[in-house]
Amino acid sequence: MSRLTRVLSSRRRFSPTTSPEKDLVATKKWDAVVIGGGHNGLTAAAYLARSGLSVAVLERRHLVGGAAVTEEIVPGFKFSRCSYLQSLLRPSVIRDLELERHGLKLYRREPSSFTPCLDGKSLLLGPDKDLNQSEIAKFSKKDAIAYPRYEMQLEKFCKFMDFIIDSPPPELVHDLPSLADKMKDKFHKSAFWSRCLQHVVTLGQKDMVDFMDLLLSPASKVLNNWFEGEVLKATLATDSVIGTMGTPHAPGSGYVLLHHVMGETKGERGIWSYVEGGMGAVSSAISKAALEAGVHIMTNAEVKHLLVDVNTKEAIGVVLADGSEVHSSVVLSNATAHKTFVELVPHNFLSDDFLLSIRNLDYSSATTKINMAVDRLPNFKCCKSSSAEGGPEHVGTIHIGSESMEEIDVAYKDAVRGIPSRRPLIEMTIPSILDKTISPPGQHVVNLFVQYTPYKLCEGSWHDPVVRETFAKQCFSLIDEYAPGFSSSIVGYDMLTPLDLEKEFGLTGGNIFHGAMGLDSLFLMRPTKGWSGYRTPLKGLYLCGSGAHPGGGVMGAPGRNAASVVIQDLKRS
Image 1 (cartoon, rainbow, N blue to C red):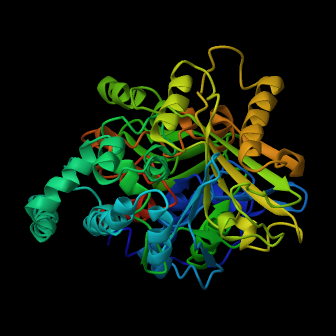
Image 2 (cartoon, rainbow, N blue to C red):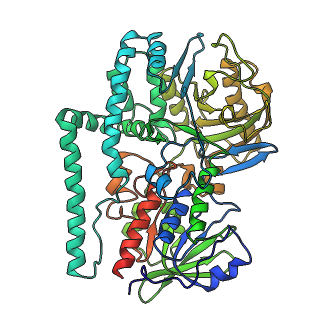
Image 3 (cartoon, helix red, strand yellow):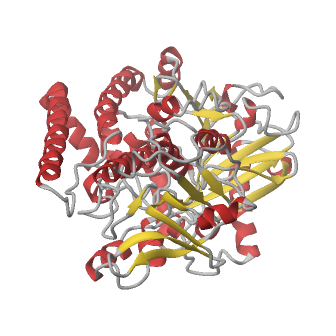
């Protein structure tokens, strides 16, 4: 009888805990242990438990969610401390885990984008096609005509990407036990490539060439071929660099442009939403689904290293920071690939070549997140009238310091020299404009996603409070140029530099995607070639986080896909 088909002797519901269930977690042998209670780890755990497996999730921090958390840093204000928008969460995950029943509530943003200009102009964009045409026409009538065709092309490419995102990569499977398993594996791979070919045929040669052009070209080239207006191009180009240490002029940046428009909200493609209660509500809903399925979640449970059977060279559990041992048949890691293989796997169980490939992964980051409590909404001087209740300019993402692609590139070049951008690229969001649960009446939560801030500074250190405060004020002063008096509205703020993101949330190098999303780090190359299928060189250990296919973002796909591979392997054992 396979491990998967064993009937559990008991099934109870538990809340995330450290005690008294800690003794149970440490004394029982689990079918699967998940390192890290981020949204992907929770997703994997939920799918595994729903298949009949006993599962324990071990989370280092005091709350689950990883980078998708809500925390009250300033009293009365609830911050989505890292991730701050929802769109990429796979519809199948929402549906399968019944996340709406578990409390997930989304607020559709319309309009979705606002770019103020220092010359008094502005650009609003959103799902309203008439609004887009009239707004873009203020800058270029030619662009207003081209924009719907641009959106249609991206949507066509996104449909092609859906299949790839929702499927485990057709990676070579090592050490299959029987000829029947080998033949079955070959059949599955053939079926995958056959479906890919069907999608290619459906696209046609012209669209496929355009798709390859988007994947391989700099975003600037793609956008220059479509549009002439600098403000529109810069607004769209921000999607190609968000979370990266890159420029719109970098080859391959077109893919990241696509990555940020491939999501949806309630079936509407490309619509980003705010989550009621902040992004922690996404993790909360997934954790409730997991708990309902029988998963045990333990917080304040830092994993020190894996337990490995020296004879079979298989992962058989983990050792916690307090010395407790948790035994399991398999281990799934929601940590970064670097954290997993370099820090958690004991020495001498992985080859030097494999470890070298992991150490050479690109974890560069230039991201700082500033979460703020303010006593009033910003009043943008390019807007003729402003209500205390807010206007359309406050609803979507507000692009500060991105009036041209060259402006973005200059900010990037500062960071390459080890200098925080003198005029940083800022994406401002105000979720409290729609979500009234996260701030006191009349006051607001403002999120700033800021680039570029190098991990290592050429002068000074992010550990220095003066350096931190100086850069924060630099960001606030830039916003003041567009919305005079903004700085005086700030009640308090929380600042997370790349070092903070690494230390507090375990994001190696401060990279929000668990590693760069360049073409050399995607699909069959993620995290490294030969090991893209969630399995790892250490038998019994699997990757289930954003460092695995299809990559970063609050998506849930890596967790769900990894769980499907684990279930498949346990059926064979």
